[in-house]
Length: 221
Length: 416
View (cartoon, rainbow over the protein chains, first blue to last red):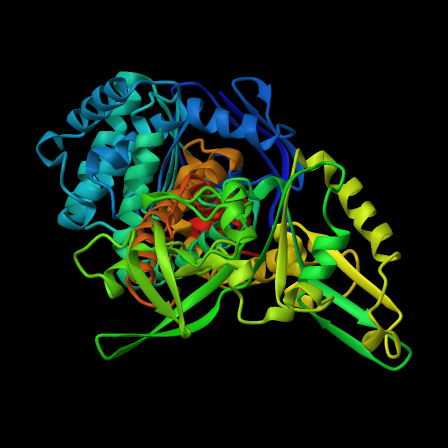
């Protein structure tokens, strides 16, 4: 499903060169739920951004569904992100001016769908995460856990095959974190969604099928 | 998608009300000024009653005689126009008349100052006045020096309140005239047509006017078509070389020039004090357009700054949209749509403001009998100005927004 070959990511400024990732090779099979762990600044989020095609590697190849996407142009990368990948961020990144259902519809705006089709899919996704009664609320009217569930609904509304979650429970208390984790596990088991999750939380990582450890930009396991 | 863009646009406008107010004020105020100025220029230059033939009319209003050490310029005299500008090839009708000048009357002990114009019979064939009563001055009236007058609606009200003026007498500058016609008021900006009272040229108090090369006359030439203009101008230039100076002028002056100008050339000649055959109207238009563009640039640049700072606020949203499949082109389209909505709102306010401002000008006495309107031509200029604002102030910020690195944008935004 996801394959990274000899991935290197170097950030260069006029004065300093920072190696974020070096010689990373990763193979994630369809339907897997893996965690990426490591200390702060080790390159976990960079790895996730590369898999999600939000950034480009300095060297190496990325394959999504066996297609080498590294050299794709912006328009095609945007299409792959829209069709294949869903994102869940630590800070939720909901648009505060939009209602819950409008937030969830965002990925569907970039597909050829009618207004009613978009609305139907968004409501279905919100129902899946248990927020049918909050459809016309604004993000500021929700708890942290509810906001993250909206973010998950947004990530899954387009039925992507891959979910990338960057510290999805990082800003939540343990109870809400458990709820979110249960949701993700449910998605993986029922929908066979491939999930790559960056986390600091060992307990959450142990609930996944495989743990990839990154240290100083290198893959150690 | 468009409905979503519109929704987001209004939400963004509501978010920072002060910035929105500044943006809308800048756009609408600029539009009001530009539309009012366009309306005034349109009023001066466009064919409009009674100057319905303005697009195929030429005006001879400026003459200059030169000697070795002397120059005299001003309006041409009757003799110059009558002897050297009649029967020009391509000219359908020619009228000699004066500019309007203040004339005093006393009615029921009250002093009334009116704009008085002396005309011939052809004047009333070239200009199509709307007569409310009576008829115009004829060629016979002018030939026989009949003391008849045409007055406008305003003058009828002042001299004969509540009555018809036709057949009645008015006294102007100690001369008595019988009113033969009443016309609608004409704007002061319609130079050839404007006056309060029109009388025959031959009733002029200056008995010597017929012998003057330089005087206070103007000729209006109605060409068969605009295509005849070059030939008419060339013929006038050729005839000016044949002018014989009267004895009293021969000592000091040896050459004379007089030009037939279009409406735009008249403006250009007056603006630049030009004495050349070609007063360079394209330079005049160029300067005007340049000033208009500069005037628009200031608020447009201000809008760019406001838009760029708004992008920074929305960096996270941009990052999310990119993460979920918005391409750079899609984001540019979104932002330009939002900007178009903002500028359209400003444009709408500008139009309403312009209409109110023009009504205020019409009702004030700034321009006598002014009747400015936002007509379809001026409306079209306004649309162009609004679209210019939208594109100029939206394209660059939209492009910067689309280039935001999604990773940086999600962290809080950087335009590097």
